[in-house]
Each structure stands twice: as C-alpha cells, then as structure tokens.
Image (cartoon, rainbow, N blue to C red; front, side):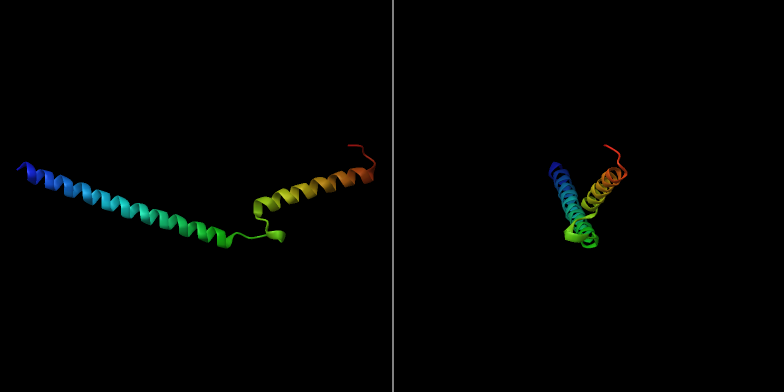
Length: 77
C-alpha cells in the first residue's frame, strides 16, 4: 500500500520536473529569439553607433553649437 503511494508520488514529482524543465528550455529559447530580433532591427548610425550613443553625440553637438553661437554673439560663458 505504501509502495503504491510512493510510486504515485515519485511519478508525479518526475512529471512536474519534466514539465518545468521543458518550460524553462522553451522560455530560454524564446528569450534568445527576441534578443536576435532586437539585434537585427537595431538601427546603426554612422560609425556603427546605436540609438543611445547617437543621442549622446547629438546632444554633444547641440551643446557645441550653442557655445559657438554664444561666442559669435559675443556672450561670455
């Protein structure tokens, strides 16, 4: 009688472990797929810069332009 319950419990535990392992592998595969999609669709701006780096470069250029305009107008920064 106890061995029957033990067999059922062990089988249930094995089934849960198999389902968890399969689900985890599927989740990791899906995450890898999404990462590849994001890498493929990431636009590159001159010199291979990504969007974040390009925004920093644009902000830096705007700051330089502002300083040059101030110098041209005779304003001391």
